[in-house]
Image (cartoon, rainbow, N blue to C red; front, side):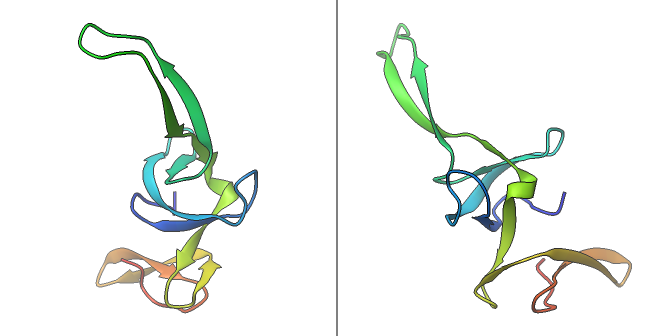
Length: 101
């Protein structure tokens, strides 16, 4: 999967189309990402012995095909490619050609 935790992404499809946010976690097995402030869902938590019942608003999963990496240098969404430098695989922005990490 080309998107990783702590990447900034742009949502390109769905109810949150056009929003940018940081990837909180990645579920590679199911090809889902959790983006900060996107796909907010309501969860009801029952009362526990030491805390009251509450309604939580949490981020839900978004399929990885519905997000694009946000390149801060280009100020645009871009695809990600790979290159090898000194025997190590590196991610590369297709728009600017810069190494991401």
